[in-house]
Length: 322
Image 1 (cartoon, rainbow, N blue to C red):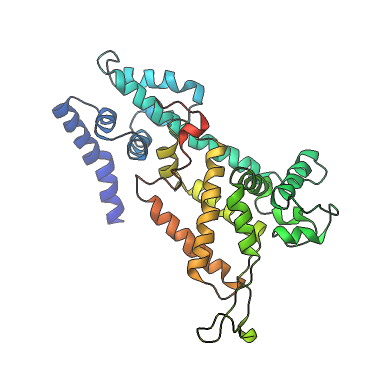
Image 2 (image 1 turned 90 degrees about the horizontal axis):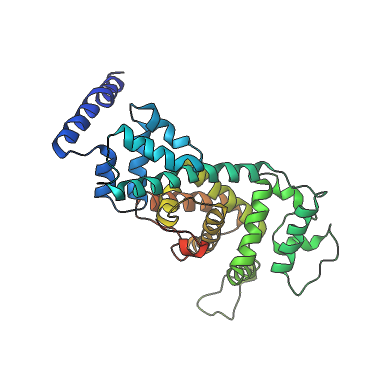
């Protein structure tokens, strides 16, 4: 209780008093100081987001939830409220607008991802069925599918004869991510699928030609099921706000679904490497390896300069860097 009281006292009195003194001393408000002392990206946008959220002004707090079309007007209103002359501070409006677009873009992306996650796979929906068939063709281009309900689905890592039952947890989001991986990073996806099907051998002594069959066990995992699990991992990173670091560093304006799918591709490949490094004895260790991998990604994202997959640059998406 005492700790909470002092935190409240600091936030309500000391912190705002310190901001007032700093503004009088520097002649700049907090938003100006943030923009002028931090480079574009997560360092700047995270601080602007915090400043807006804890502002005493309703206009600044509500700016976090404005529609993207209202961002420019909102910035004008903020600068008027703060008595900042746009003619003498031309770059400030541009910087604030870029950061606010990133902030509202993150909210928009969460809504879009959540909508896909909540949409169940429907075998009566021709669009859903078309995506599923396309996934098979991308991963098994030389093997015709004998039927919609078939044991062949296990060849790409589904658990049963009908993949629709495996999408229950992540809905259509899981399918879209797998298809994006297969289409846009096809070489990596095919290699990962092939590796997932390979058995792991233990050798007698140092002779690789003498296999002790008593110590032969599979290190294989189900490619599609892992993809759905990694979709869940990426979703949890997004909802928790952990992905703000990456997205604010990669997307100069509003992040879109394609950014999320690129993150999924990166996580799939990194998990494959991590799985090999961990050298699990069997698939029963999957949850342990996944949890450890999750913690590793979270540690990386605590660095405000972190970009998980810098090779997927914002220029690939034809975005304009303000």
